[in-house]
Length: 61
Image 1 (tube, rainbow, N blue to C red):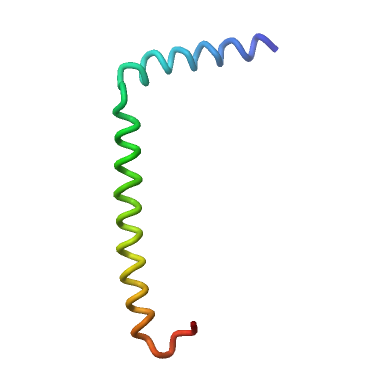
Image 2 (tube, one colour):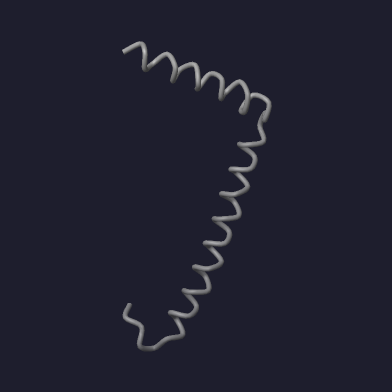
């Protein structure tokens, strides 16, 4: 089983040392901003759809 686990471990260590450590905190910042913009867009779209549903008298509520 070691023949499978050790290469995967070595690859993950290499990946962490060569991508995440030099990137510092930027991946967290990018992900947080993406979530913020996505949630804002979702809320604006939901507000628009709620107004459309309120103005439709044939809407089942």
